Image (cartoon, rainbow, N blue to C red; front, side):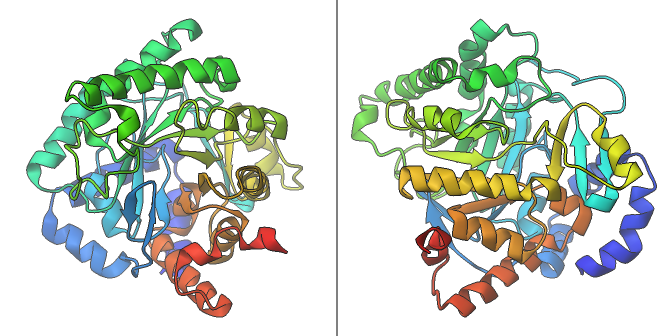
Length: 395
């Protein structure tokens, strides 16, 4: 199916401006999401085989998820499950609505299967986003797989007010997600990456933790008495989903040094970090012999796609070794084929995400990768995907 997309449909789409194609595609997917029979038909073509894994106290039908940035408005929530994804991460969402950066802001380096974007957290704002999610829930179209929400800082919020800004978004949305991601690593909001500093990040996580505490202790409970992994999933929770502590993950930049990453790891226990997403887009650029790619690489913004694969895997491997495999890692960056996904799992990732791979390989990519992972497991003699996590670090 991916081959057909690449040969026939992709050339037509790629002849058009990238963001316009994205918006049209999201409108189509939104329409599909609102029609159950059509959505079921999509699942019959593109649904993935079962490859279950349980991490973060959540049950995932397979380890491959949709990365943040694709569905910033929650417009197509049900369709991601139909397309074979084992979970979806929506956003990034800021407390205040914002249009993002001006002008053309999404570029394809087609020969090298990469994308440069400087979108700038264009989104409807946390409270409007909560209303959209409430509509999906009330419609009975909520997916069965885990749903995460990526939180960013409002552009209008000064850096010193970042903890309050993130906390307000979390408060508005906490009952609609199985996990949250604190995004302090996008290169497209001025000053945002400064919040990866240990002290600044600690303040943000403390503010979010306080919102969690208010909710839990308001019911006469203590956060310390409730495992942050207690919810099996949104529909089989042992606690009211409006009050149970939800896993909080941090998304890191591929441009951080190992020393800076180690500083973030020091916050895992005191600030109850449940996992790390490695990685966001990069501001570095590879060497290229292709003139078109070089012009795209000259654009400001974050680079994703195949050129990011090796660096994101390197960071996953470092984080896995530093934490001795005790911290959940979600690998993202340059995943196009089963080999790319397998590389990240064996380096230490429990879960995976893709964005650019979907753009370049089309709607069959999730099913193809999950089937490929199943074959890899058989070759290794694994009965469960958990047995493959981090095995490349044992050699």
